[in-house]
Length: 409
Ligand SMILES: NC(=O)c1ccc[n+]([C@@H]2O[C@H](COP(=O)([O-])OP(=O)(O)OC[C@H]3O[C@@H](n4cnc5c(N)ncnc54)[C@H](O)[C@@H]3O)[C@@H](O)[C@H]2O)c1
Image (cartoon, rainbow, N blue to C red; front, top):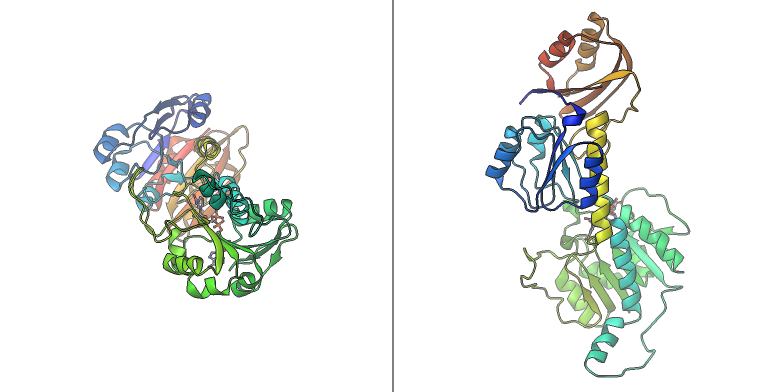
């Protein structure tokens, strides 16, 4: 699959599947690319038929980009996953072919934060219970058990993209914020870092989980952690279903130890829309259950479309791989009047020296150069002033370590 590609920018072909947001289509069309956007996902056989000649492929979560499909993709340089996950793509084969994969890891974080805040207020005011009673015809006008969030302490477990944004907005609502993270994190605003999870659990009126889904986090929040929470506290999980033991959570709620919970993610989730949702948390009062919609807003979808389309455009035009899921991250500002050679290679000693000796032998002047490696692969951008012969490219292409060579000018 060792390929040399020179793409005429005016003839870039883009195939978008699964009804990708119109913002992405317009962004790519504005570059003059030929964009074909299909409503549905394609299966492997259809992809094999459609991919030859396509430079950029855009998918969401349903399209499986298999090794066979990638082998048929003779001109493909990048795949945009217009979503968060990239499990649907054979990343190993993509890397071996020098195909960059991009996704949108941050686009829906604000949506998750807003849902968490809405739920914190709703549970602290016992809105779900009041609402249910009203629908049953009961006028339960009482302040007992209802609180303002102002002045209450929010404990954020996992102070990453989502946890930090929540920290800032919660402080703006007048909440005090504590956080616990296994990594060293800068405290934003007046947030207080806790030295241990126990410290956070013992002091927080609301505990919310925003950890990542690394295998070590499976079941990390169970009976012991729930018991350490303050009596009457509220619990939220909008991170990953596997991190919480739902049997223990049910016990903590039915015993009255916790005053409420909001859960958006579950250890096993129904496959399709309309399928039955089975959970021990169903039917409990002051428990908000949502079908993994933390990041599902129209704004997040538009942001994903824009973000990934931008990544693809920068990759095609400049070869920069910032935030690529599979290739080393390299960003070298483009210089006018130069040609750019992008060299994806297997990561072994001496590749840079070999590339530069080929360039030197042919009296090619290097104006700028940046190399980064990641695991098995290296990614080298070289900016060249003046013209150079096709023999230079043939020699670079002929190197045993070359995975892919691309020339941009
Ligand atoms: N509900 C939804 O629809 C939805 C949408 C987007 C993201 N998510 C999930 O939200 C979670 C957070 O996303 P993010 O973008 O903020 O991730 P992130 O990687 O930026 O942050 C995760 C943080 O958790 C910390 N961490 C990991 N394990 C920990 C542990 N055991 N104890 C304490 N800290 C721990 C990490 O050091 C990191 O700082 C992820 O699991 C993600 O999958 C859910």
